[in-house]
Length: 470
Image (cartoon, rainbow, N blue to C red; front, side, top):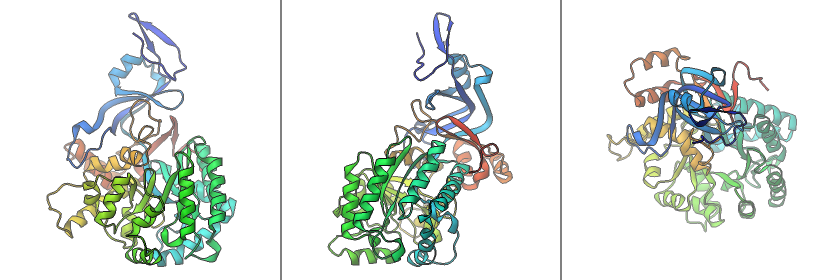
């Protein structure tokens, strides 16, 4: 018998006729992760793995080699004390995945008093104008990535601005960290300030250059990024489709049905299309690896089309509440079996924290039940489902489920360490929890960035106290 040592560069020892691998590094703590969609069952025991005292073993290349109970892992790998970093009493989770956010908007988060279109005009467009400057964009990128990581988010789908340099800056900073980031240059050739407009020709040339420079370079991937149908001409949407289909594994990210006036405007601009989603579909932009943010006012027919085409919706609760956009129909998305992830949508979103995003998502689902004919006793967003959407569900929605979202062997070693005693109120509340479901629910309602003690990117450990601020 030989325990697999694929990826391990350490020696082996003989023990009772067996050759046993000496693990290069491992972490010990309370380990939790989802392995399947838990649905809306309050405690779907077959959908997750939980080790109250577990060890996660890592390969030298940063992938996960194994996971299990501490006694089992010690026996299997003859772990020496110096190879195991002890986080006993703390939770080890997969890193969170943010499926919709805007890094240039970090500096205008919490800007008062407007709904979508006025908010764009008053705050967003003037702010985005600064990102033609490389040093400005690099500084903002560093701040943004720091905030993501401090909040336990290790992967994100990100909008740049219309400027090519904004995306170069973001990718350069992410590359330094070996962080999995998907992003793209905004495409916008109408219905926006003249100083932010490009053309179908320039957007094709610049996006193509970014794709050929960055897509699949290390852990960087590219997303073709028309802001939304209102700001792209038919000619530009055709260019977006050309780029989306020309390169293997490229993503498409945009917005849809966030605001009622936006929906009406889109229909006026594209009268031949059946509905808002059909605008994108008519150009071949609805399919796998296409992510549509918000979807607050989608029709039943649009939900069905998204599911049929295997496209993804990014549910952005803090943003939808902040801009007064409406309540996302989580129940309908579930019924249609849509690919679904969660987005912080900085800067209309009000927190980088996925805990706070889950907190607000739960409240939106509760409110939606109150204002519709949904049975009041119908369970919808359980804590298991919530953390699925923030980890493995998001990874699958981004077609990265083979790489991210859980702590199963073979996955990339992106995970976070949570100190449940960092917040006095959370610590106090947890004393009264009776089950894992109770603990997870308290965590999603009360935790924030203080809970995140450390994070790992491809097996490399960072802590807030020792990580240099860029």
